[in-house]
Image (cartoon, rainbow, N blue to C red; front, side, top):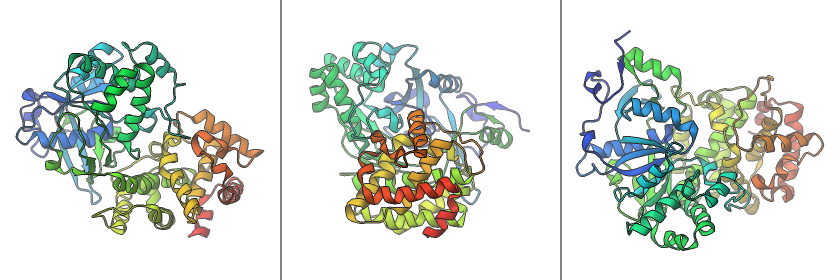
Length: 494
């Protein structure tokens, strides 16, 4: 084994030449972006685009200051600080090629639970032009049934009453914008990088609802001055494993306590709508467009929904990773049928995109044997994902007279998954969902009421009133609960 080199700024020169390192002067980089929710995806996506940009001219004011809003972010904070905010990106190609680089665009990290005012002050600093977000679908605090802000959230109630010591992203954004407004500092842009259709519009709607309740005058200021560009983001980024850390140690002698692994593919399509300047990300591969809607709808309905199709059906069947699931000919064929027959007809025209080629690329990306994306990660927080990713497609097809059978089987599988919590081999499933208890209770009711699960209006809206859906759903519930070998039903459908 090679000598162990701890990742730090002073040790970069000791790393093997096979590892790309920041060639720019990190000491001269200042933060122009505060990013809330520093996880694997941010570090494989926005931070990498920005790192590439920092290697060029006139970009030193666009460093990133990370912010964690939860006590659970402390581990990330500690590791990044210890490593001078550096981390390693491990890019795994389908053919086995591996590219390794150290990313240096994050230059600071703040933990709000330790000092809320310091985070507010940082966000209000005149040098900060953008607050970007990866806070997951659930972080936007909307009710899935109607898309409205959920004022029943305990932390939201706290923030409304305690604006100086907030807990939620909305509390911090309003506190910082209030301070900027009072000081005459131009507003920042709020830039969502989450997998929500019209993510910028959703961020604007949620923040405006919160601000209107807390400070109506500030809400007017936000409406006039703050921009919320919609964006489509894409790069498959599985959870970091001990094997990833061991790979760096064994191959390069590098000790990184939280590297990131990802696929080579990456995409970022952004509406060019910013309050106060932006980085020239178009110079490093991002695409700026007037309207991101068709791109994000394509990605959410095909890639993200495709993940959920494989994740839920594959979990019950007994698979553990996306690549193993899609590599099974039956599951791969089923996914492609879902994409071709149920999703493609309800998509908008996407300029410059060959949809067949895009779907081919998705199957190839899902099947990358070197990206072991765990199905438990894919299925986590399904209650926040499926209304936008999958259920919306069912509604569209019901309205258009299209097929719903492939998606309906997934909903029936989700009921079984939520009810039993085991796969067909009676092995426990790792279910992580903010609505886990509600989902389980509703699914448990299937024993006496086959429509119990889909009566969860906050998830399914009025789907329970759609006879075409309920008739098919009931048939599939009967089949899965009689024999949870979902492959048997899938064979009949393709």
